[in-house]
Image 1 (cartoon, protein in one colour):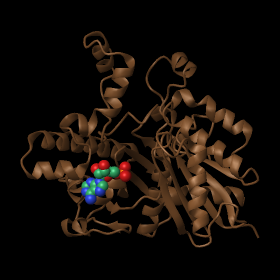
Image 2 (cartoon, protein in one colour; image 1 turned 180 degrees about the vertical axis):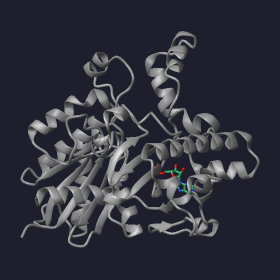
Image 3 (cartoon, helix red, strand yellow; image 1 turned 120 degrees about the horizontal axis):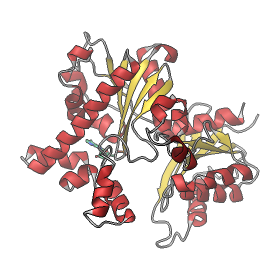
Image 4 (cartoon, helix red, strand yellow; image 1 turned 45 degrees about the vertical axis):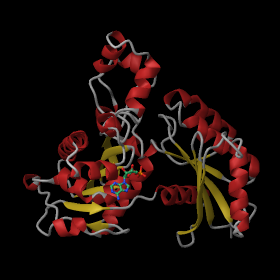
Length: 381
Ligand code: AMP
């Protein structure tokens, strides 16, 4: 029998997050984060992984252990090429490299993580799990932008969606919470973290999601604008005199909540709102308005909604965001129970009223567990 442990690596440009899980019982054996790679004692990702390796060895969980069955890597962009977890080969690495223009901030770091892990344990199966994969089932009607098809296809311009690992995990966990078959449940998943996205999931299959070519589209986020008229970009270039890179930075790093009020953390915004701060109030209202628009849109996309699931930092913790997002929607069959919504807790739970036709749930996401599960299933297939 082979090992049952899976190391999950989430490699960013200057950080390396890891978790070691035992798939025999789903337990977490170790987890950690190496930050500021390239800035100090940790010179590069090779040094970062050595550090991870040392930290694990110190706990008797060394990477040379025969218990280790696979490494699962989070990869942000799989384009149209990767729609499933994929065993990593030289050819796969080359294909992920070809997708760098679609995710210039993320894929290079993911590739670096893959390369150093493969050098360290060349014998070990390594699996790439793509953030876009879960959304690859979107119909063309949802995935296409209404622009010239030839231009779009020449440049890979279409809607890919992100946070797919989380949407997959949460939609399945929601069906489990309801005690129903996944195939029977239509769910709107609201992943509200610093990045935020919504998805419409019909019987476990994604049919629409709010992020697009990049994670910039859709909901108002901590620092990203989400949806806007594309002409804003031309206007800022022609009239505002901003360069392409300046507009990119503006919309990705200085927009959303932080652009509207100077803070991107919902806790701080809430504190300021409670003190009567008008900018914080406006930021909150813009955020909620966008969220409600997507809930309405995905209700129409799905036709019948069985569940709405809130997840990630804001979705799991901010009861007032959930309350405001679903206030006065009894005409859509959505009624939140105030007391249930106010209860804090770390596990999946229902917050809808007994007479709510649509179940409303808080479902903590677990992207690492999902990546580990997918990697482990693949190497044991
Ligand atoms: P994530 O990207 O999922 O880690 O979510 C991070 C965000 O969750 C933070 O920027 C906060 O805005 C938000 N958050 C975390 N904890 C809370 C909380 N207790 N109440 C409100 N928002 C929270």
